[in-house]
Image 1 (cartoon, rainbow, N blue to C red):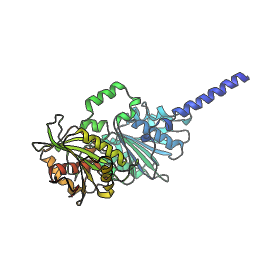
Image 2: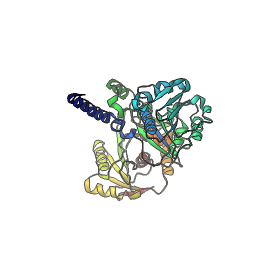
Image 3: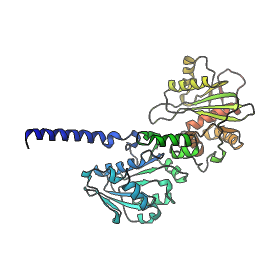
Image 4: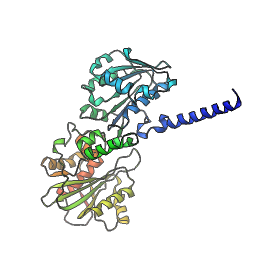
Length: 419
């Protein structure tokens, strides 16, 4: 090879290395698609359609295999046909995302995938979960668990066989559906949960598709489930059921409004949310949930959002919970927005007890939502006395409706009341 051709080869190899690095999964994956840190056993991805769940599952399995972490893997789908069509041969399946140097060989008649390094993945259908008796694994990928006819039974049989290696793990990718078993998984301490919306993956989806689902389904219960990946089915023991949630897009003149703030202690990526709910009441005594502005905010940002809503709605007041150090919010309010009407509230009863009379208002048909507030309603339908998660949006809702219906003080000062 002459010098000129050698230089061309070097340039080509260099450009190829740059291209591979630029298109590698670690660089194109969104943070929500990357394997979470920490000591977990189950990674549960609850996300809307088109989020990229299949690609995440495939890339996770490939990373486990190529790193040597897993050598015996279980792949489980609703049926063998769906597994082959989606998890293996699909556009984001294992065959599509694997590199030539992985040496992946698919043997359909054996229901096996074999990598060059000797790792093996076996395929199992949820409809025949009894076949999991006997095999053992050090890793697993379950796709669309919410579709399984018997999700708990299939999952249990898999977990009995997930006993190889130092830290056997399972990734579950699914669009949620009303399944009690999903709520049970959310309560497990060895589960790390990733939530995701269809719109997070908009760069890889057709604009016409995104526009259609936005116009047709956003703000509906179906959209909250299929787009935002939320669980909108009541859990046994919860105060609310889906049947008591009523919606209206036509609002009558409102007599008064309130903005309730349930502040979080911190504002990091894994912190609790600051609940911010806007509610109103008409002259007939009907209540309306107008906005859910909750999120992970620093204190000044939360106040800016509340102040903006305050200006937007007439006859408005701000109610701030001061438990757990929330007094600093009212101090900031005095300094930053001295003309804003506010009231501090402090809880003496537990969350469940405070929520009971508000749930009764819903049962009596006195409360309407302007549209489906998915994350808020998921908290409403899933919260029980045993719940471990802090329902910040629900807390703010309870404070807002308590202020409007039950405990409104007669005087503007002092800015303090308790329930």
